[in-house]
Length: 377
Ligand SMILES: *Cc1c(COP(=O)(O)O)cnc(C)c1O
Image (tube, protein in one colour):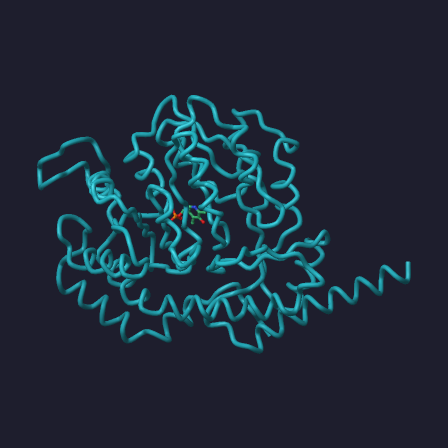
């Protein structure tokens, strides 16, 4: 059996008629660019606001831009420092540097691989202006604690929700706890376009308006540029696709949870997995298991036809791109261990029960094979 990490073609075929009709309608309308009052963009923004239940949504070109635009809207720039986790996709840190600010990395917590909240305060100084908690793999960072910390030190919060569509704490969607929440609609994300796309949500309508203007050359009205912005508009076509897919997101997230619960029930005694606090909803973009024999496990699953991935093999501050900061592995021991010992296994809404079973058996066999090896030596 071949079990992939995701199957976007299968997803498309299941909703082909609706998607094809939406694409056709967009092409016929001529509303290709997400500026002004493009109806496909407005429809998607409204639908996403309904999905998160509060806040104002601003569509943009991708999830990396979303973070950068959020930071710029909050006036973060040269001379400022922004706290980011050591384990995330590089985009979180790039957005900070592209604003002219400095990313300051904090190690992750071994229970959940999210920014270690107890280690943030030591990195705060008078230049610190913001924190970017990343809801890695779809599990929310404890925003109640982050908000407390941000109030105490007068910091802004931009939540990187690129992997966390549908995730919440006490029923409140991630992205609404801080000043701004940013999303990626990269095809492989839980809500994915057919190309690059991103979005921003925030409770403050003025801040949302500023974000919107930043995505479209600082235009208030056509040819009235009130500040310098950029071109980071979502395409009408992507918005139309996302509006269709959004109607399935709740059901898709429930299916991800179902699979995750089967995994959790099967592995609790064998492998460490992310710990989920009471009242937190995990969006399960990634299901990750921890094992010191990660590479052997990867090979074992690969031989069975089960695809796996490593998110991410090198903590961001140790990438060549950040060598100017002179960090070493000993600065981020938990992120380094996590990058060596965790493995993402297949989880996607179209996954069949027999495929889930195949992954579970693969993992259980590996465990018993290894126990046998260990006892005979
Ligand atoms: C995907 C991702 C981004 C960037 O999104 P793009 O749409 O690819 O630019 C940012 N942060 C995290 C954590 C991501 O997973």
